[in-house]
Length: 424
Ligand SMILES: Cc1cc2nc3c(=O)[nH]c(=O)nc-3n(C[C@H](O)[C@H](O)[C@H](O)COP(=O)(O)O)c2cc1C
Ligand code: SF4
Image (spheres, protein in one colour):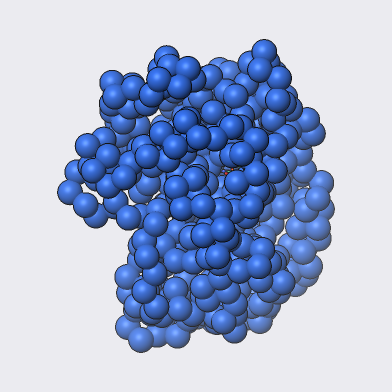
């Protein structure tokens, strides 16, 4: 089904990253409208009405988060744009930043005005070389045209925005670890509560948002919250960029309404599975989210429906595996990622992920022992809910969900010392 491109409307135009291209296609009109027509309260109400939920993984209602920021004008407040995007299978924020950075800058300025912040930071993954370049150039151009700096568009509102490069640690995408890293410390999560909207960067109230979330904001201001809320499902509003990868014919980013089924995304937009093979497994929302199977193809990609199906919308990064994939190998690779990225602050995650990896590796190598499946499950339950930050729960999802849906593959590996899937 064709759907109007909203967030990706400029991607694909020549020189889409340039400020002139952005201005030619209606760019910065939402900011102009915001600064001259709306108060902070208007904007918070507008965001609440729109139903926009965070696109960074947790899906927290954006308007509610804005309303948690203290109203006092003499309190120093910050806004942070989370451009870390380290979740395997997720590559939408990078696209927005490389191809349409001004849409994110415009969203960040509107958000800063709404919460009364005069200083904002972009935290970007160090490996995003082009993204860093595009961010810096876009910010310079926005200053030169009066969209950043002092007295923006004659409104009396001031905002400075600058870029901070991370060093490529997955945990620095977690908002409190990101704040630690921004402060120049080792990137480890902080205990929550207090949440960043209360105690954030250098102890001050801080609004942290994902790139895609901020890119939605100018459209809500220009076209109205009712329009935004008319797209999607009951609890999941607006457009969403789904990143499709793995064994599909046409991997890539597809912008569609929240609530589009996995079947439509995989078979209509991404062209189905390569070579006409059968689909075996789907990781629907980035590596942290539990695997599903081909039986879940009719599940709509929305917060509430994925949770009912036993998984999560996460980042909307859909990874597909065909009938030839080895599920134990897939669980091992994903677990290896989490074990490598564990920040080491708490023992269940630091040691537990290494132990998980060890058992998965020996099963994959054909040396699995009787009782290994129960050992894996025991370890997962020992980690889940017992870690300092949500990464512990994320790290067990590949193992738990793959045993739930594909237990017979584990049993076959252990009993026959080899893989059930062909070509392994
Ligand atoms: C381990 C971990 C990694 C995360 N990585 C990212 C990330 O790369 N980008 C992102 O926007 N949010 C990431 N998040 C979610 C952030 O903590 C936070 O919820 C988000 O930036 C808030 O923005 P949103 O409300 O616009 O989604 C991560 C969370 C966890 C637990
Ligand atoms: S769960 Fe893992 S990533 Fe999170 S604080 Fe503990 S060790 Fe660090």
